[in-house]
Amino acid sequence: MSVSKTEIQTQFDTLVSKVIWPEFKKRGYSKTKNNFRYYDSAGWGKILSIQKSAYGDRSNIRFTLNTGIYLPEAERLWTRGRSISNERFLEPACLIRKRIGQLKGSDDLWYELTDQSEFDNLSRLVEQDITTRVLPYLDRIDGVEAIMQQLIQVKEPNSELAIETLFNYGYQNEARKWIEDELTKTIYRTQRQKMLELQARLAHSL
Image 1 (spheres, rainbow, N blue to C red):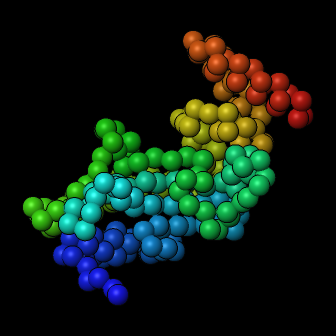
Image 2 (cartoon, helix red, strand yellow):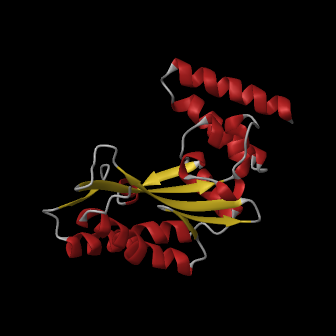
């Protein structure tokens, strides 16, 4: 037996389909539930995932915006070849993951829809964040080279996976420099050991 949606649930659906989705649709993204995904046959992708809080309910919906930049090679390294999502990738499989709070340079940001919410005001806020933060960030990613340059310039995520991905895409010198920088500045024994092991593994792969 189906249960009719509450007004809050209907407002959330409207926000997703009428406010957020149209600009992504114009850019050639596909929509699967609350995921807007772009995948290029050259082997890269980007996504916006609208994540609901597990602590919400039918009359109180808290949600945030997650972005992801996807590379099959990074997923292959991460899973050690067990599975590759390719055009079906989701945000957790992405190498570079940023929430709207990070894109705004603030703390973690969650929007809230309740009976007390002013829907029009919230809708304008979300639309503004999409058009001024999310889309400009994702629009800059137009190929593998753009992803590599972001890794080189920002050095995020600061992980072995990011460095090894950079190396495997042909940026060996940049990957080595990243490892050297980490070895120079880290004060953590575990991180230093990981970097030394990665350095040895990459040297052996040449």
